[in-house]
Length: 120
Image (cartoon, rainbow, N blue to C red; front, side, top):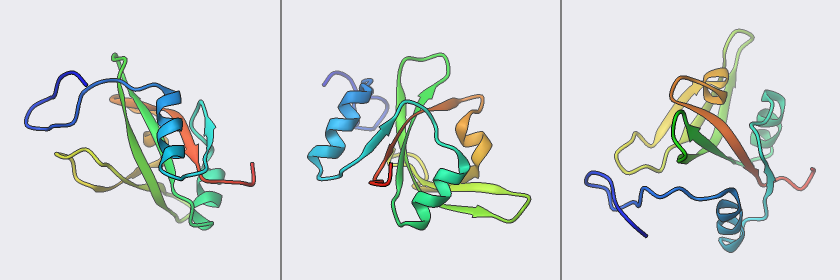
């Protein structure tokens, strides 16, 4: 693969939806793919069933993106937050963000979803 960024050895090369889907399947993960974000209720259902969600984001103004893994949520009647893991080598690994900001903010928007969920 071409190119690296900064001190990272991670290639800064865009992948396609089908590449991510194939990678999950090669890793032995049976997944359902959506070409959009998923509603808050689906986030809660999947996490409550111990099924993390791969959220692929698109950087605003760029053709590239990144993957996060949603592994938890918090809701108290006022706040709806997702807990997510960021595998980028120079980023904090464990993070949280308000769900609405995770779906869309000034830096990125949630473009694709991969879920380990046989119920769909």
